[in-house]
Amino acid sequence: MDQSISVETDEVEATRPTRTIEWVGPFAIFAIWLLADKWLPIANPAKEIIRDIVLIAAIFGFSHRVVPRSAPHWLASVVVGLGVFIVWVAPDALIPGWRAHALFQNGITGRITTSIPPAQLNPIMLALRTARAALLVPILEELFWRGWLPRWIQDTDVDRVRIGQYTSLAFWAAALLFAAEHGPFWEVGLLAGIIYNWWMRRTRSLGDLMLAHGVTNLALSIYVISTANWGFWM
Image 1: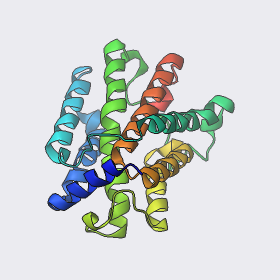
Image 2: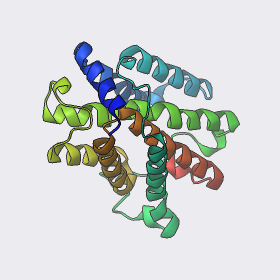
Image 3: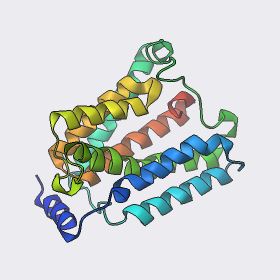
Image 4: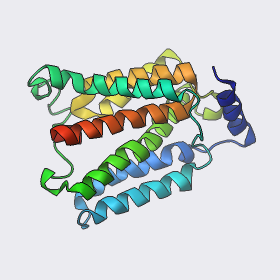
């Protein structure tokens, strides 16, 4: 393991205790916006721009102290991110009608709907959506899913649990909840959660997880735009 990330993590943990809001705040704001989105009386692209500004403000306002500044294993993280992208699109690309099965779309997992009508996806909207997916979502999701949740499962005082440290319960609970978050894409979400958790345990570098997640989302966005398979952008 690269010693720089260990030193960086130790310094963050040793300066003063972190607060839950630093790890959870941006993700909570993101989730609340998703729930309220359809009731917001704001037209696009203004609504998308405001959403991104709110998320940037949440990341800097809540989490500036815990967001990592480096990804020591950046090349391998890029490869991991591309691998997760392949895992994500492979079932639908290889098996026609795969996602239409009741195992994936039902009353529990939900059904695939696009949050933005395809007719509104002009170049500005595509650029905004891609930038958010590749740059903002990986930060706020990894703060929560790999930076906070597995450690909180082990000890509610997360500062007593090292970044990247997992028990079996923490590993699998985080992966299963990550899968549940992705609704009709739960099975690839589970595989992605397992891979990301494994990479976090191997590198103990939140920066590398954010990079891998960002590469996955960027590759997926390019795929969606090039194939017009908008269902991946729920």
